[in-house]
Every structure is written in structure tokens, then in C-alpha cells.
Length: 316
Image (tube, rainbow, N blue to C red; front, side):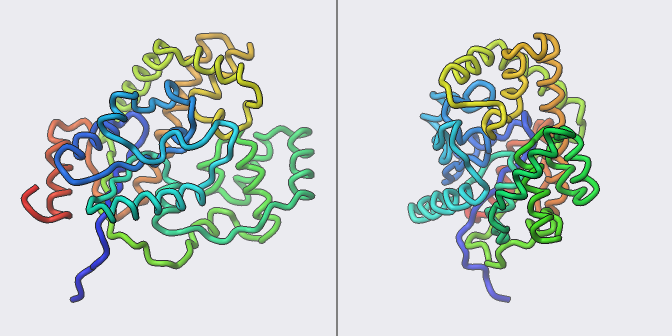
């Protein structure tokens, strides 16, 4: 049997509010790892409170690559992430350390390890027609159309996520095939690292829901609305940008625009975060080669350390 000579890497995955960052920082104290963020909100500068971004003292002690690398007005795709993550991982490996990628954005993890299928370029004519239809029917109706054509994609795309609903419908029209099917294809290239996947999967979902509610209240108390006011005051930002569609920010933006009251804003923010966690857990359960760890067990740190020690070898 041949020995896998690829350098090691670790994926630490989990739903929002499952304690990924704290565990990653602890592991970096015990093992020769360097951290890489896998989070579609943390890439944006100025999205600090609502994204639960690690604070400055934490980042100073435990640096994370791929945090604060884009302005909220700038696009950032899965392909962008893959290129940036591979470059960060190569640099970490060259330093003799192990990349530990931590986050909850499943699309990024999948794009990184499996590569990206070649999807068609945008078609302005189709996009304009879909936009006109959405203006008449509403994006929830367009999402319902997507659910009939590509239920897998519709399950992970929000009913009001106009940009992604439009892109999924556009790809179907251009290729005659569901977007989800094409995204699973990958590039066919072998991933240059051998990977240990750790998935924080709570056995008691109610405990996660409680943490989500407590954290959202803490985020509000820490100044989420002031943060969003500052984003609105910058100009050039609007509610349909991917950065502003992030959970918490969309709901705060609506509240500050006078569309919902304070109590509704809180309820919608907590509900949206729970829905995000549900989608993340569904995706994690499809990662059959991941080792599941219950974040609510007292021996979490020990079990994670044992897994890394076995994977990396040696007495660490």
C-alpha cells in the first residue's frame, strides 16, 4: 500500500454559534497549525459585530488568514476564495506548519477541496428578462420556480436572495441542467493536501438554538445597529449586496430603513440565524468522511486533540 505523501491540512467545520473559533484557537496552542478563515462574511472589512468576527486581541494572538480582505461593496466568489485559500495554505505548508481551515461556509470548503465546475458566463439578455419577471412576480415566486427545476439549489438559496436565485435560473436556461448538478462536478484535480475533517454537530439542537438567541442579543447589545448605520452612511452600499445579505445585516438594514420594528428585527435575525444553522448542519451531514464532534460535550477539546494527534503523528 502506497503512503499518501501529500502534506496535511485540517478542516474544522460547524454551524454558526457552535464554538469553532474557540476550538481552533485552542488547537493552535497545542499543535503547529496556522488558521485560515472559511467564512463568507468575515472576508469583509467593517462587518465585525454582526458577523461575530474574532476581536482584535484574539486576531493578534491567533492570526487568521482571509479575514478583512474585501470592502463590502466588492464581490467575492467561491472561486476567489479557492484561489486565496490555496495560496494561504501553500505559504503555511512552506513554513513547515499545518493549515487549519475553520468556518461554516460549506460552499467554500467544497470549492476548495473539489474544485469548481466551469459554469457559463452571464447572459445580459436572460438576466434582464429574469429581473423583469421578478419585478412582476416577486423573488419568492422566482424561488418557487427554482425549487421545481433544481430543488437542491433552492433548498440552500434563500427565497429573497435575488442574486443567487437569478444566477441559478440563468444557468439552467443556458445549459439545460440544474446548477446543483454542475457544482458537484468539480474540476477533477486531486486536492494537494490530505485532509482531516472535524465537524461540530450538536446532538441536542435546542442547545444550539439557545446559544444562537443569546449570541444575537449580545451582538445587538455590542452595537450591531450602530455598525449598520455606519455602513449605510458610507454610501455605495445597498441591501442586495452579498455582504449586506449576510445574516443579521439584512435584518438590521430593514429595521433601520423602517420596514420592521425593533422586536420584529430581533425575531427575524434569530430565525434567520437558526435557518442558516439548519442548512449548515444538513450540508455537514452529507460530508461522510468528516469526524463528528458534539460541541456540547465536556471532552470536546480532548477528542479534537486526539484526532489531530493521530492524524499528524508524534507526541503533540
